[in-house]
Structures are given as C-alpha cells and as structure tokens.
Image (cartoon, rainbow, N blue to C red; front, top):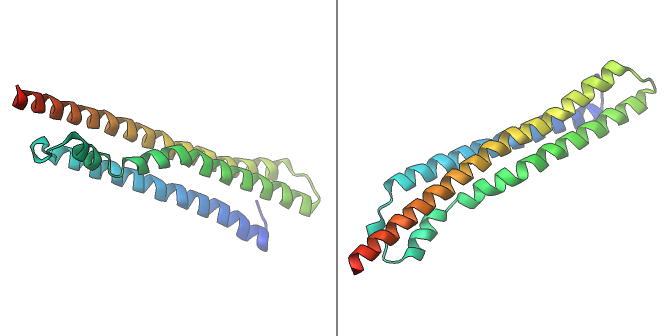
Amino acid sequence: MEVSGWLGWAQGAVDYGIIGILVLMSVISLWMFIERLMFFGAVRGSDYSTKEELELDLGNNVSIIATIGSNAPYVGLLGTVLGIMITFYSLGDVGAVDPKKIMTGLALALKATAMGLIVAIPAIVFYNILLRKMERILTLWEIDAHKKQG
C-alpha cells in the first residue's frame, strides 16, 4: 500500500518492529531451549544434596520460554490491530476505496498474527519438552536418594 509521511513510518514500524520483536523472541526461545538441553545432558544428580537445589538449577530460564510462548500471539495481535488501523486510516485519508489496497493492507497486517503463532507454537513445545525432562531428572534423583537410604 502506497503511503507517505508518518503513515509510511508507522507502517514500517509495525511491519519491521513487530516482526523484529517476534524474530528476537524466537531466537531467545530457541537459544534457551538449546542451553537447557545441554545443561540437562550434563547435570549429575549426585552433585546435589537436596531435591530443591536440583529443582532450582533445572528450572533456570524455563519460565522465559513459557513467557515467550504465552505472549508471542499477543505481540502478533498487536501488530495486526495496528496494521489494520493504519490501513483504514490511510484509506480514509485518501478518500477513495480501492479493494486492492484494502486487501493488501489487511494481508500485510495479518502476517503479524501468523508470525506470533509461528513463534508461540514451538516455544510452548520447547517448554513442555523441558518440563518433562525436568520431571524425569527429579524422579531419577529421588530413586537414587531412596537407594542410598535403603
């Protein structure tokens, strides 16, 4: 959609700003997931005297992934709402209704929602995988602790 002045700036800010934030969220989510997997692979239960200490170390950075997974759709929705507002404002400013401009503007706005979902779905999968791995490590620690006592 051809817009000039502050509308062009606003459209670029929504387009690149929201998508940029979502890409950053995706990179952070993937980075934290890989870091946690590496930590889980290297953790030794025998290094911990209590289950709580182990649980604290295992849970580091996992909440960041959950936060990204739960908030990415909202960031995408914000981009969509702002994009639609800009589209309607620019159409009202021009004074002519061109279906091609409307559809192009709305399609560009909706890509923010799609990107939000593309970021959120893997982040929630990462979170669930890490929770399951944490449960397994904690259960194995408890089994070892019972063997040492018995």
